Amino acid sequence: MRIVSLLPSATEILFQLGLGDDVVGVTFECDFPPEAKTKRIVSTSALPEGLTPSQIDEIVKQRMAAGEDLYKLDRDAFADIDPTLVVTQDLCAVCAVDVTKVDDAMDYLGCRANVLTLDPMTLEAVIDSVRLVGEATGTEARASTVIDDCRDRLAAVAAKLDSAHARPTLLLEWTDPAFTDGHWVPDMIAAAGGRSVMGRPGQNSRGTSWDAITSCDADVVIVAPCGFRLDGATRLAEDVVRRGLLPRDAQVWAVDADAFVVRPSPRVVEGVEMFASILHPDRHGAPDPASATRVA
Image 1 (spheres, rainbow, N blue to C red):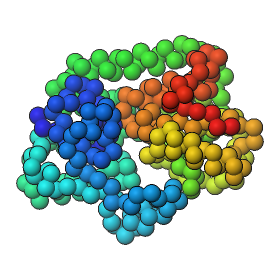
Image 2: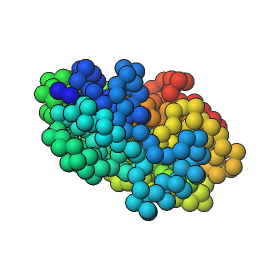
Image 3: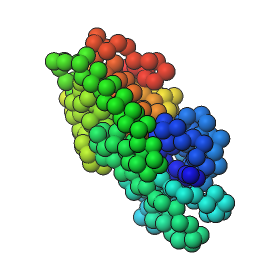
Image 4: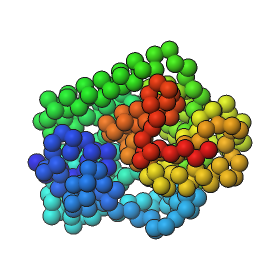
């Protein structure tokens, strides 16, 4: 097979299924496992570098309103690779190249590759994405092993948290403007012994006001901005703390969002374990400082 992955999460799944040698094209964001960075890049960002969160939000809204692309698909690379399978998404135009652009490019080039679209909205659907990739690549047995491991680890977390109080938790997927958690993230919080106070399980993340955030009943705030690793998330968390925008007396944590929260791959199970360590350290142990840090 010659596989092009247009999603960092799909790239992670493909490598987990032992298909690293078959992956011949990836996006500029595909950085895990490290071997993914050796593959040919076929999709890059159309946004300038060095923007603040508010600038990113403004430019994204402007370009989407104008029907302009947020990602650049390298048609020459597609032609050179001539893939047999393309893995893409139709979940979020901000997160990856639009599936319609992929279809247009394939039509233009006469590419006859199969296209697998992954659009999970819940934690269970994220795990099931492994099955879909396994079926598309003939690696069903390995996919079953990965899925079983995910479910065993979630069951282990649940066993440790049996009868624990569900802590009111606010998760921020963006900080300027403020966006609370959606898609599979409220499920992650619930699986970790929390209660998402402003999340939308199985629905898109949405913007909200800082007044609503300040007045919510969360006693834990997790800052997990999409596209940011721990260092960037920490800077943004420190900023909202300085501005006095969060619920009084709430614990504030920054986490490695790209690794464990916003990419719908099996690593979100590690995200559940990390959340459990933040919310219930007495039962699950302290979080790994390389993955999460307390800001306030």
